Length: 237
Image (spheres, one colour):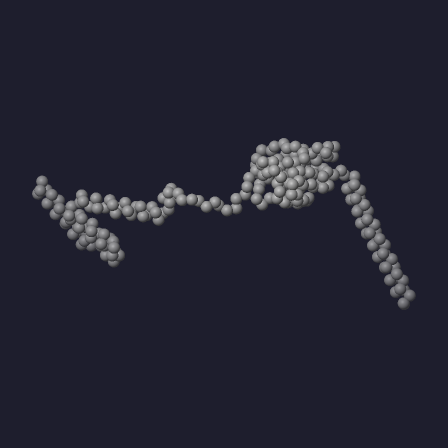
């Protein structure tokens, strides 16, 4: 009984070791193929330099990426940078500056001409492409503004304020109303004064509104007064 169990355990262990060896061999073979492929494929060290508009070195350490972070490096104090071991293909180079805007570079590396890549620059999103020479020399196109500059005193901006417009309209009415009142009859002045007093007192104004809706006697009085004024005017004539 014990001898048979030992034989089974030995058999299982042998199969397990055999499987492990096969997996290890496959893994080593895959790594070998990758290394051979990488050794056989040519690569290129991309070089460039950042400068200000006046040709002075861009002495701000800035992160530079290729293919959205597949390769990355930082510029030196003199503005130069190098991205190592770039394979053939079409690559996108971006300058990640927090204060200055640089254009985006498209770089084409061909296996037959690794030493002379083709470079195109897009100054802004949607801008027309421009051919630039290699090694790359890049300049900032704009400066980022994170805060809106404080505006100075402006009369036009002051006149756009609703409060100022209301004050100007109120002053204009205070100046024009007395001139308008001079051309009215005494009775019309009294009626207008009464109306203004009613507007100052909300209860009176509300009662007048209700009277107007329900046909209160106030409208009849006003109608009579208008008829009387017409009779007086006809007698004067």
